[in-house]
Image 1 (cartoon, one colour):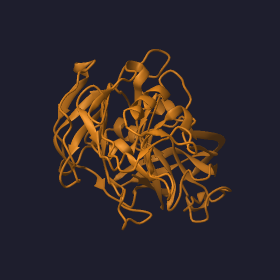
Image 2 (tube, one colour):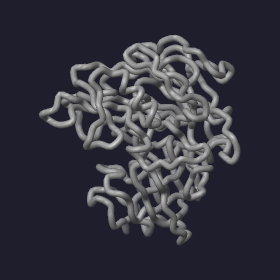
Image 3 (cartoon, one colour):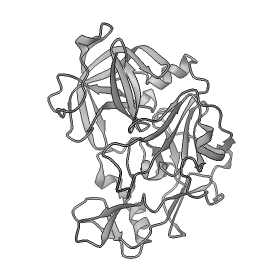
Image 4 (cartoon, one colour):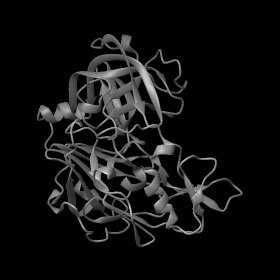
Length: 380
């Protein structure tokens, strides 16, 4: 099989890998050779996939895809022939979407959903622990991204119970399941509550494939207004800066506990070498990405700036997302701040972690395989 590293992305639903015919791929990108797979079948159907930071175009095909002990014959995926510069880099060859089929541009059933439907997983869930290398002078360009567990959780990586929150019901015509969504219910900055829009106007995609946190213009402005000395960054649309000697303390709540974000994750570094202002990890989504507004689309995208601070679990039945405090093994740095007022208390439940049927840390990735054709690896 051909083996590839791909980004594990809970904010999208398509699987794609760069093809040997890709005209815009880097020379160092490992590419898929369809002639090297006896089981590959091309549909000759062209399509494109849009992301918040770019797009990819190519032909739809099928092949056997494997990840660890799991295998899906005739998995539909995109063989990418053109993509936006910078969408992937290094040894990464593509993206494996882990959201729901309803938002798949290829109309394919995602790999994890097929495994769930075929009852190949011990439990209808998958989970993440993400590593942190910010401010580590010894970090290489590529480092172990964390641990992905498909079909359960890894109890060594979290402590206490997992707080599960049911995904909200959306008005028609939104599909019942699209993105992994929660409603952001409360934000604190420097220990004080910040007023934000709530309810379905605060739909938040919990997105492992996004580095930062993006939100609505007014809410993001209110967050940074609570940080003394903050100001917009003229050269970076949608971004704010703050004095580099300030620790920005933020918590997010989705209807249950208030989960703190490590101050290191809120600081992206100085604007330039001569500046005493540092760029913040929360940005204006409307100004800083190309995500369109539509029924069921998120108003917030909550990425790794937040997710590095929790153990996260994505459960398909019932559709829900869980967070737990990181264990000392996982570098846990602080418990959540108890409970906040909840708009829907019944949507929260707790669960103890179970075993880990498949768990593996790799260099920012985890392997999948498009087998007789391709082995896919998933980037954390």
